[in-house]
Length: 184
Image 1 (cartoon, one colour):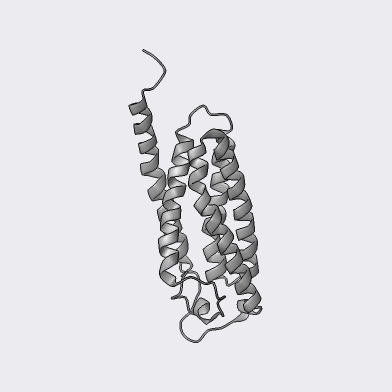
Image 2: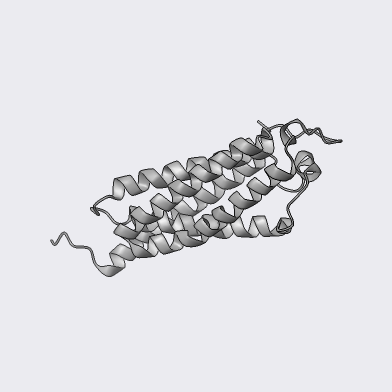
């Protein structure tokens, strides 16, 4: 028996990884956002002054769903690249940037720490760029799937910065109405 897998076996292996990674990333992203009460329904966020380039509420849900699917597919490609040089580092960087990603909503929406959230975004952007670079060295398609994410993170960083500039006392803002604490 040969140790080389056929193209159909490789596709099925990738599909198995993708059927695990895509739903997992979607689930974790959703849980992170829900726990932090993120979005326009958050009374604290609704009370903030928003920058002119702030997209409509529906765009965030659509964008993050697409981005999480692309990220799930990208990591599935790398996980399927068994034996590739640098694969462990690439996976480690991916996990690190996803942990930063999942921490942003609780810090921004739950704790109201706009400046800390900005630092997390900068770290996330740098780590995601390093991840994409490592992915490129293993499988170019995986790196290309990360480009929309990098673009969105850049945009999110600008939004976060502008919100901080427009709301210098955001952490102490007390909106009228319901609470905005992290839901446990």
